[in-house]
Image 1 (cartoon, rainbow, N blue to C red):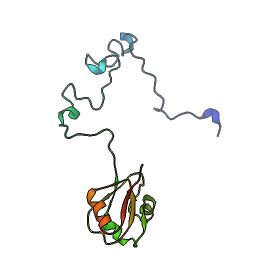
Image 2 (spheres, rainbow, N blue to C red):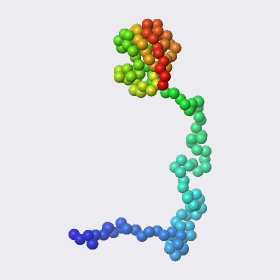
Image 3 (cartoon, helix red, strand yellow):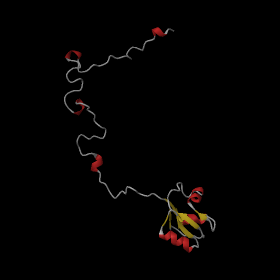
Image 4 (tube, rainbow, N blue to C red):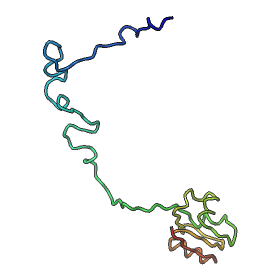
Length: 147
């Protein structure tokens, strides 16, 4: 086979459409854009979310509630979950991640859901009042650590 004789298959090469080159070209005057309307003009871009001047869906739907900009997201641990830990253990964020209670140790909050039967030294970024009370009633102590 000789590389000099290679050609693309018939129909693969098209002549370039030169629009706006007079009436004799067949693509003069409106340059294949039709008459008037948004798509016939300058840039003529119609975005997928454009609804033809109708009030857009995102503005028609009601907005509910308050959305704080600097919202704090906590990893939650309940005092009931801590019952599987042995007595007099120091429970800190690293310990909680190792045992599989939390995935992220950035911000951890202990909530007072359930009953605590063990005396533990718990370190977390935040405690609910009920959790702090239950930990101290069980003979342990709750220490708040800074982020």
